[in-house]
Image 1 (tube, helix red, strand yellow):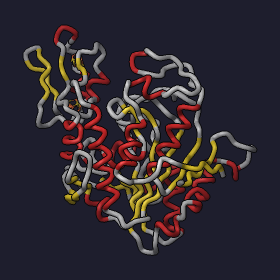
Image 2 (cartoon, helix red, strand yellow; image 1 turned 180 degrees about the horizontal axis):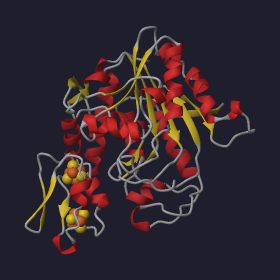
Image 3 (cartoon, rainbow, N blue to C red; image 1 turned 90 degrees about the vertical axis):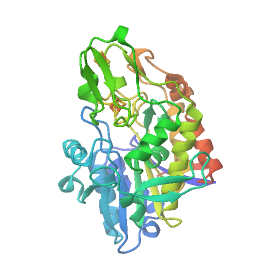
Image 4 (cartoon, protein in one colour; image 1 turned 90 degrees about the horizontal axis):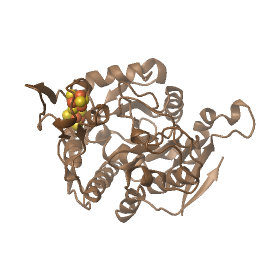
Length: 370
Ligand code: SF4
Ligand code: SF4
């Protein structure tokens, strides 16, 4: 049984020592940061750097705490993510979100290079994939602290640490492949609902959408299947392609396994922020209110255990009234509900199941509140 440590968002007393921010240090000590990071190690601090309109990524002070903890044990940290928009644009977004050298105390770099195609080809005996293009700066790092904002996701149902690795640590063409393994392709356009407003064109970071002679045209080669345009279409004139979700989730977990395999055993630590748990992911060009109250920060050396514990906490919590799903369809969810299952119709625990099948960890865990 694996241990998952937790700094509760509800403070026992109103003091600095009880603040979850203060407790990041203790959480990292509990999972043995001095074993994960050795003196001189280059340490990737993997996070999601956000999007143009969103604002609920893990906040800069928490990242700074992780950077300081890595430095304290002799590591050389860098904060990183892979190209979503192309690298230079993405660094501008990171800066706008408050993630830069001055705020976090470490260089912020894009792990798959300026065009998203710097990678190492890694063999994996996965459920679907046999090789994965892992971003070079991740594959070359000596150790990694995976900092994850736990939230929902339109295709994966849940976006946690597995997704942070499986999608967030691979290069652009691999992202596209994993999305297309889902059986779908580019978004589908429904002309009868289209008002030619152009939102889809301006929301696409990859220049894949154009309007020509009254038609919305999506360039299949440029489209990375991020589906931002689907989210931003005001009239639902764009929709997700029909898909075989199981294969997509398997590919996602396979890719996470490939990323993990580039590190020696015991060189990765995980922090899951079960805070600001929105129904949609950090790629969307907006952020909504959370669907449950903040639970706290979880830490573990076991990715399966921490994912299971995060989902269990979300599901055991009473929902917050407001906006708990696309289109205002769901207003509030109750204690005990499998919330992402209700929102997306996809069981979020499938990721946990596949990761356990690949022996990435154990779903049996003991939650230790610090
Ligand atoms: S955002 Fe929707 S309505 Fe506007 S042009 Fe694109 S498809 Fe048409
Ligand atoms: S899914 Fe839409 S927004 Fe994303 S790359 Fe393709 S066309 Fe652009």
